[in-house]
Image (spheres, rainbow, N blue to C red):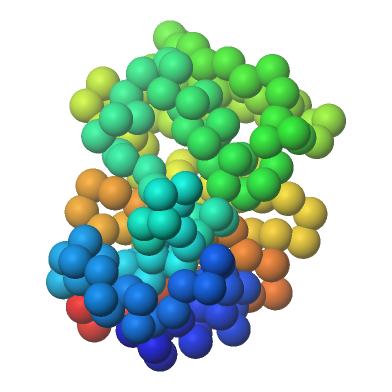
Length: 179
């Protein structure tokens, strides 16, 4: 765990509120998370919530692929991602709908003055994993990027300085294959 903390710190995800690897090792819930998903657990134990319990780094969030299944789900996801990225103030006019001719969801939004549309696959059972990286990057702030790793039906997304994105993505991919 100490090695994972050191790696994440080097790549822009510093522990918050004095959290240490020793704190994580002593926490029962964190220990369970470490057993299930050792390669993402560190990102989700880098901070403390209002009650003092370990929680995700403020620039880390999760996406549950089974709950992104309707026209309102994708706009809600963009809001959640922009909150994690610290760019919620740049996101405006978010709406969702269906493009019947293309059999696709439509997500319209304005980010930092630029209006965009993204067209995820129309599926009422689970999210379109192909467009997820595009959505993650769509709300990244200036000089920032997203790295992500899938674990089961969940994707953990981390927003870090752009210069660290490729290496963090490589590290997350490596941790995922060795787990």
